[in-house]
Length: 161
Image 1 (cartoon, helix red, strand yellow):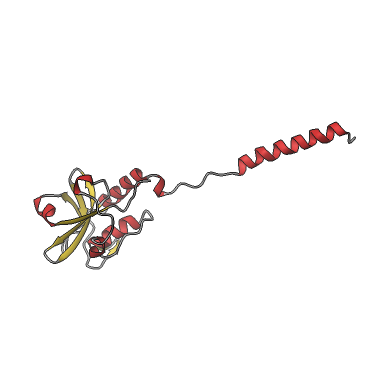
Image 2: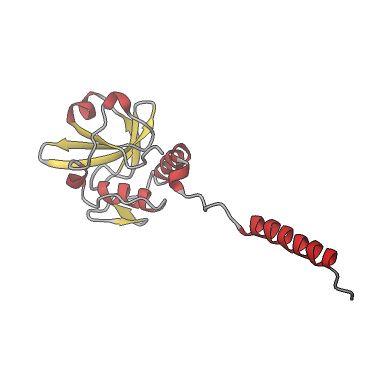
């Protein structure tokens, strides 16, 4: 093949354009994670919480075969890569606190019933899912006057972007 000055410039141009197009193909957008879709993740958390209804309460449990209230909340959030305290009382120290009037799906409700701390996951329409106590199963129920009077704090694990 003959090497003339025009061919050299043309070859360089082809090489430069090839490099530009190849580089464009190699740059990959950063992978999306749960924090990119907070509303979707809230729905998924509530879906899993509801799917666990009927599972047995087990003191100190945080596995599918039985869980206490904080084990239940920890299990559900951990399934989607979120960290959550393992003890109900620890939720009361989480910041910032959210107003009850600003509740969103998947917010954690923190109650103090007599001297016992209790947590559940807000599931919308004035309802929450929780692991009540020994001898009972995980269930969804209305935040009635009793629960409202015991409410100490609302914690948002899934933050907006």
